[in-house]
Length: 372
Ligand SMILES: Cc1cc2nc3c(=O)[nH]c(=O)nc-3n(C[C@H](O)[C@H](O)[C@H](O)COP(=O)(O)OP(=O)(O)OC[C@H]3O[C@@H](n4cnc5c(N)ncnc54)[C@H](O)[C@@H]3O)c2cc1C
Image (cartoon, rainbow, N blue to C red):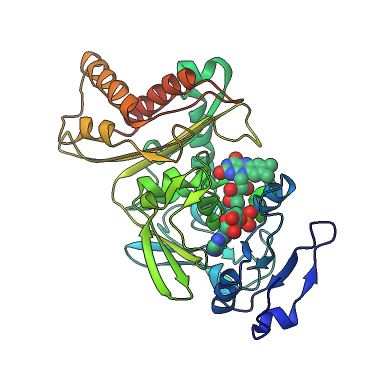
């Protein structure tokens, strides 16, 4: 199908995918080559966890594939004082290791978690013993089972609650939210193969990392045959399976600013493991002198794309943090009401729209209370 024989990867790595409409699988040796393959009509394959399910259902069945697995430069996580730059090929496993157990000496993944690769030492908050952090993360996850009365009725919620542990320094509350969302994706096989880039560019309304990245104001960096550009994650998704990405663009990395507030991710699914979110939510809060000074709320599985709950955020802006139950109830009612303008869930095989509306309101209110 591809006629330009000047692409090195094409000459070196031509293979036939047996039984799949004779699509060809190529391997790019660098990002420029990957972009060139995309321009010729290939589709990119990162972990392949979504792509091959899609192909099984006939989507992209006639497209040649360019594998990105040789682009090791997209597998790293770089940390500066004010941000993390996460390579698009970083797997969920690696995110979990990196962001949930930050005091550990990590190994760059080369396809599988904990396998050989370039060693990277990552130590933040050296006063925190590794075992305490691991148990703090576990405690956060267990606590999430109390997501809401509605959620408890038939589903389990899971969460990361760094605010309660008090163990994370500036910005590190955000770190734990990234790690926890990654740890709750699919099962071990999916987390071992699936990448943050694939999670974003699948543009599934239920993608677990997307609300987290939206709530943290993350930005995506792309390279195409015409040059480089960046886009805020919240402007990337146009609809289910649709993004603002050009066909010849490779997602290089995601920049997540470190923030000084506290954050929480929760997911409600039909079971504890291997469950696509019925509703998921990420909440980021800053408070100062008894006031809400910054709030970011993002939800997944609640609209055609993950969304920022701007109406609910406005309710909190500049407001006093309630000090008694009556004030909390009044605030929660206003948040629940505002949230209904932010989301437009549908009935599907996993849950009804009305259930999603109710659980979304309960979850977000619980999360705000937990963080305030
Ligand atoms: C059994 C199962 C359970 C799952 N559970 C969950 C879950 O709980 N939560 C959840 O969020 N998701 C879940 N998923 C979905 C999936 O695993 C994730 O979305 C995953 O992140 C996809 O990443 P990938 O690397 O495998 O992407 P791929 O399948 O390789 O690619 C997905 C799409 O992104 C494009 N793409 C990928 N990387 C790039 C790049 N760098 N540049 C340009 N384009 C790119 C591909 O062309 C393709 O269109 C599940 C999937 C399965 C099969």
